[in-house]
Length: 172
Image 1: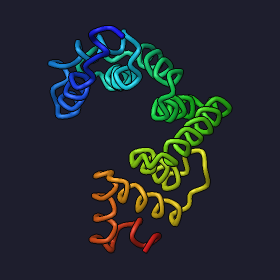
Image 2: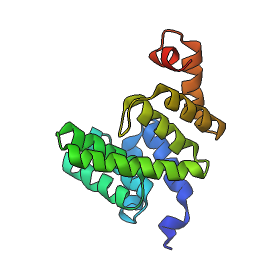
Image 3: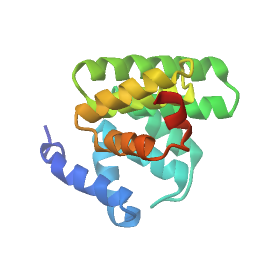
C-alpha cells in the first residue's frame, strides 16, 4: 500500500470540500487518489468531468473515470453509466448497468449500508432498472435512515412534513 492510500482521511476531506463548492482547491488531491485506483475518487472525478466542476467539461473523460470506478465495484458509477447510455438511447447497455448497480446496492444493503439502501429507494422512486414502486421506495428510505444515512432521514422528514409532496401522497 502506498502512502497515498494509507490515509483515506485526506480523500474524505477532499471529497467533502469538493461537494461543499471548492472543486478547484481539491481536484488535484482527488485526481491523485483516482490515479492510484481509489474508486470513490474515480467516481468524483467522473462527476467533475461530467459537470465541468474544477476541470474543463469532457464527457469522454467522465465516462472513462466512471468506467474505472465501476470496474472496481462502485455501484454509483454503474448508475451514472446507465444514465449516460439511456441518454443516448443505448437501452441494452443502460439496462445492463442498472442491473449491476441494483445487485451491488442490494449486496451492500445486506451489510447495513445506509447509502446503498438510499440508492435503492431512489431506484424505486425513479424507475431506474426496476418498476416504480413508492412503497418499496419508502421502505428503503426507512431502512437507510435506521442505518444512519442522514440524507435518507432528511428525505423522510420532507415526506412527512410536506403533504403536497408526491412522495407523501404515494407512500404515506
